[in-house]
Length: 225
Image (cartoon, rainbow, N blue to C red):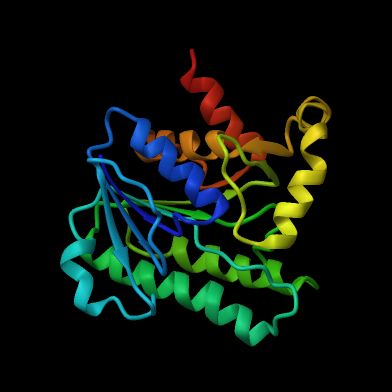
């Protein structure tokens, strides 16, 4: 497979990139982001853009891919709905429209979040915007589009969030990770599991298109048999 990853320097994106580079049937991994990953691998290509809304002159580098794992995201804390909509809905759908035109046989996987509001009418601003984004993506002419809605994600293999407050949070919580996995198996995933599940979905095209934590883990468990 040839894979595109948007947001490979974020916590989730780092985990997804790691799994892609380790997987034998992945031939090429092309990252797209505002900064380079800092990694070196014979499979890895990087496209660094200061403005991710402007992709017209990079279409050749975005063509010929089997799947896109869209891991870009920002926290809604302190943001207006207008600003959050631009960096969530508008950025994601702008990129997806370009990719669906260039790669109509592509599988597009979007990292959303637990609690996303598909009705687009709920009280939580971020959930409405995420729901609007999901709904728009599922109408686009990809081969398949999947919405991943993980809850709590444990970073593995030295991966860290780029957000300082999140790094502090994970540092404090780290001694409890094992307990959290045991007590809330349907609410907790690892960065490794998210990456593995994306690859499985890209290969197998499961019927369910919106996947909560339980569904993401089920993909992995079924693959193990």
